[in-house]
Image 1 (cartoon, rainbow, N blue to C red):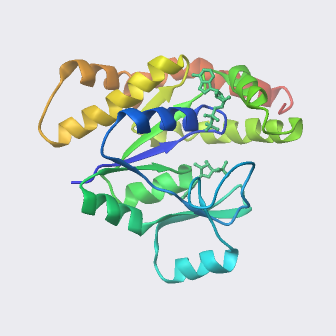
Image 2 (spheres, rainbow, N blue to C red):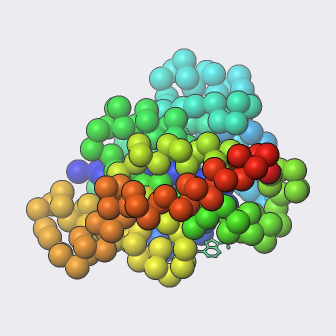
Length: 227
Ligand code: ADP
Ligand code: 5GP
């Protein structure tokens, strides 16, 4: 049976870095390439990061029922997961990894209640700002907008099964691996208690206390003028 894993994160948290690493180490994991109406950025290639299509093409795909989920993200562009990626994973006996936003995650959870959702958190607001600056992809204005969006996105953390605070990269890679592999094992009746223990640390109920200072770091700046 195909396990569906959903990963969401505010921009700059390190999701692409983590997903890139996990795709090298976890076998039998298909990655869904989303469709979007936004324009390609930098070195992005059609069919690699996304399928870049027009709004008319996107709306035709909606009418034809081709999407498992879709959403308007940042109020400007459509993003959607094609059903055929799930079909392909099922045909190949692989699991499926979806990199989608909170709205998409909610739709998938409604349709596929067994899907496992993971939210990647930055260690705090100033570290997120540092990573966004260091990545040098965005202007100062865009970075401020992303930080404000991040503040709103992380408020949704309780909708996810696991919360992974991406502090030290090597620890985060191991934690993400543990979540994927232990969920796989649970569903096939196997049990590796060490793997399970490493994944359980990221369970929502185990994370609440650890998340308080992170949430606080975003709220303080909002109260101080939304910088
Ligand atoms: P996202 O896909 O969530 O927008 P990226 O994977 O592009 O984020 O990461 C944003 C920046 O932070 C990149 O420059 C990346 O190298 C860096 N980064 C990612 N994870 C870590 C980490 N655990 N510690 C320090 N820097 C990180
Ligand atoms: P970006 O434009 O920075 O690549 O992505 C913006 C946001 O859209 C990210 O939060 C990303 O997870 C989300 N996203 C990408 N593909 C999809 C998708 O197919 N569906 C939904 N709902 N969100 C997506």
